[in-house]
Image (cartoon, rainbow, N blue to C red; front, side):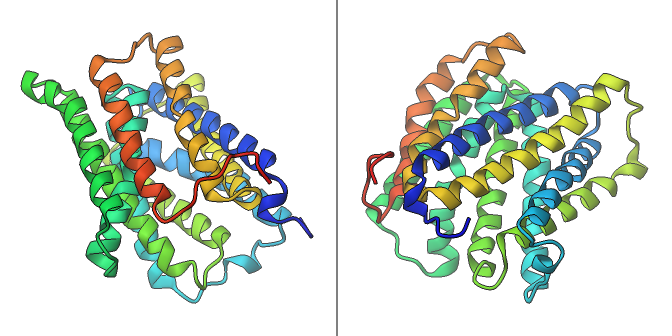
Length: 299
């Protein structure tokens, strides 16, 4: 909006961030519910293909479609999109094996791994913040995963896939940092979703399931919810600074816990409750490094 700056509408940004958390949880619920019948590639295709609809409408509304899709970094888009698509496959595979809350918690490793990747790949300095964030996050993952490893449960594979998804997401976001100097957010989002849809479609020869109406509806909704969540997050970052939104990022974990309780009848495990503060503390350290904390609604 013309004349609107980030600091002028923090309440709108916070509201949109909370809404994006609800929509993202709804997407994960649909994916998990459909995972019992739909193969992984089929799920990725529907989630990505139908996410294109709200995103294209949003870009057209902002007059960024199709002109905003012009790119000077096709190789950068391909790398970012490939890593993001691989992360989606790993994330959905983990979600089929884990409660929604635990899969969401593992995704909070992404900012920690991004900070570590900045050191290893971009030559950034290893600070006390980053070392502490990594230690806290890895301690949380150990608390969450070690009981399953000792018992030989199938969920151990889910934890490994969730951690892999976070690693791949961190790589994708590090690539975004490089290409965003010349590429628009709309182009980055569009090409990622397009590549993910094509990657899912490539699994068709391996065999897709014949879906009933309700099952097909779940997959379509997963895409619509996912696309809408991305739009809400984009607008939230437009209206409020990332440092103002960060505390509400972690409030978004409330919705997966409620979804597990109300829809899947799953109560949070002791490991999840112990891991939660450790992983969030690590993610918070990584996210707030070098920033001054502000009250969310202070102008």
